[in-house]
Image (cartoon, rainbow over all chains, first blue to last red; front, side, top):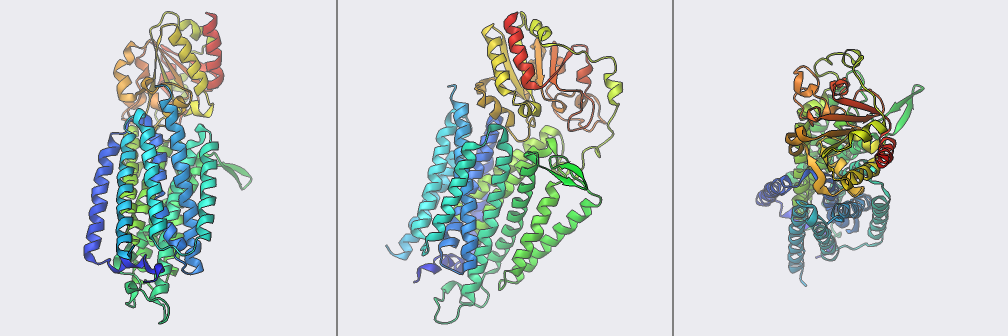
Length: 108
Length: 491
């Protein structure tokens, strides 16, 4: 099977049951998120935001596939642009969170 | 490795990455574990990217490398160079980038699916798109949602970042500050119309999987909605907007996860979405306002503004000097410092730290009382004080410090106004009625470091400044604290 269609395969399987699976994951992850983040103290709310910036850079995964699938110039251009934006989030988000958290830690 | 096994390994890697993201957030429940958590999060991201790069049949590398390089350099530059006082606008910008990346990926996916759907015999036909309609309905719905939230987030965040960066522009020969609440007549109707149009376009997009034109129109209309929603918001309401956009950037990633059928996007996006929603809720509660009120009511529209400045202040405000305040510190046992956005503006955090160390060396107990909405983003004050090297144990939340304020000898309010205004407690008709405040008026003596008697964001006078146990030290925050340090040293 040609490499460039790998992304298309999941869509082929995207029938009703897989939608329910995705929704299940979504709802359960929201619950986990609420449970964990409620316990974050207000002191760390700014690092929480910058690290969630970094984590939402996970779109990079989708962007890499779109940019590298060897599809039309248009799709590649969107993909590359998305790769750049998501990488700023990932790299910048983790670095600045680290920088901030080191300031909170250094007094220990 | 066969295609099947490859996909399985990749999905297991995504599962591992998702677990590491949860550990990263769990680490943030305490400052001691936070750095380690962050490293786990970064490891998770690395694993997810590596699995994608190896296991997703990527055929062209040049442009990927260009994108990664540009993004990394920009990210490193921003993260290393940005001063702590500019973190709010950087977070706003990053929120926007997350939204932007999401709607671009959804758009690219739509274009790719249209192409393979329309592919002629001879080109690699995919099983997926054997039918005439390129995308199944549910994928089209996800694409539409991704476009709506992603574009709204990007353009709303750009406006928010410009506001936080105090950008100004010329309009009809007048200087206009972005940071103010910018309103025009009929804005609510215009915003509502654009919003309804964007929802209708979502519906249209799902009906036309064979063209991307409607999708890009949706992106443009959603961008306008994002700008219209953010532009009237100003000043002290910014923490709510930043938290909300943070949530949207996660939900956009989530929607993109539904588009490309990828669990790690859905899980990571939900975590961020939940985080932003919790922060939004905390910020709204700390102002005793509903989200709808923050988003749609212009400040000043809520209730009457009560007595005028003259009625509150005339003849009652007592001004003081650093030397007098230094004498106040003589023989006291507890001092509380209440910072507000003014501390960030004058970058007074280091001078504040110097004073607190000096007082502690003389046996005074110094604590910081931090209101949840002090500053321009959640936790803004905490980061600035941590930067100055103040241990986090000394940073007390509002609910923690309020019951102990009666035993505080001197409260130093620096650059805060509405969050210490007792009107919130006393006047049910005031615009800030019911907002929880730090009850500094209960301290034995209050010293307010402020440049003038100008009102805060709520636009109302503050009776605290006229109370008999309050002294006003009219000065810039940094200058005042430096003078206080030298005055205390002399006594």
